[in-house]
Picture 1: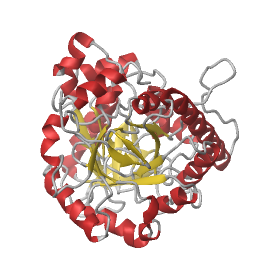
Picture 2: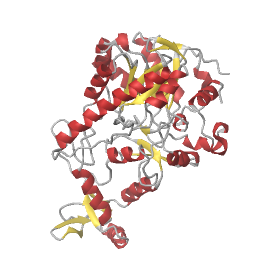
Picture 3: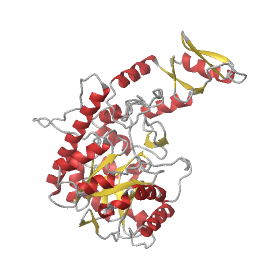
Picture 4: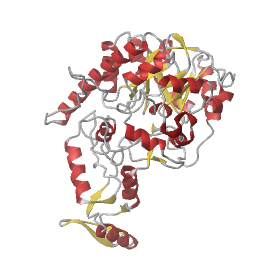
Length: 463
């Protein structure tokens, strides 16, 4: 057994094993309720959480209103309703054991409203709020107003200092912990900065040690660091436990709990994860959020990679370097390098005959069917992000003022679909970089799907 002592999290002594909140319907009231039932911490994703009709069927998000702002308002109402419902489910399953947290992506449009209203509507059922994907500077204020603890996700001590100086120093009473999420190993959106090389991962020990040192200087010695991203087996993290350089610590598991009997992830998605190999997860910049994210290289992601590889820079006026004319349409032309003409013609001959501009003075090539679906997705945009590169939506004034980026995709559409049994080939499959370990993990031998109880017992034992 690993010498993992209980610590106080969100006002109660619990086992410091935490379920990572993931995506749309990848962690819900059932999965988080069972984590809490085991005396650990369950985490509900507030990203478009499900609610149900009188017959127990999921009410899929729908809006027939014409204006995007109106559809956005409908989206937020559904998210609030779903978050409250999932908190009720988790609370009922947990039976007052453990802790129930919720997780929200800060860069979602109106994330502040969703958090506030869910905490009000599920008062007493939620003990903590985890938030990342951006700098959630208002998180401390929102949580403190509702008497719950907050857990910012950072990938460096520098990010914590920015949040502390800007806001958190005023709301230190309810700072329950700081989540360190390794930007090279975590699944989903990662906090990789422009100064860090995605191809050169750094040792998490030194980064976490630096984070703890910063926290100690701020008087946060008793606040736990929650290690996330790449956490699979606690035996591999023993040097972090009981280590004065690291201090009080907890561990957040993201990928491994995706394959349990209580996980809402579809059987098809679980099967894909059980059969991945090292290198099958890519850290890339296709997300319309503008953040790096990690996902399995399936048909969907490989096509995005192929489109990016076919990208060609252009200029609007002829020059010595950009001297070759290329027609984008019967009435519009640009100039590319002569060396890129073969590349362009090869893509057109393969059926990628629709040429679209990006916001970066470049062009990419799509099939007519891809372009048709892209236009349809933009028309149906519900404004899920505070700023979206795919649709040019902005929650501030309705538009980013930039061209929609054809190198990205509608993230809401694909995550809703895969989160409700959609195609594992034609949707984005977020996953951490150690997902390949399912194939050789004895707990999952011969395709076995454990219960949450079995998983947590294995984690405690260091297996």
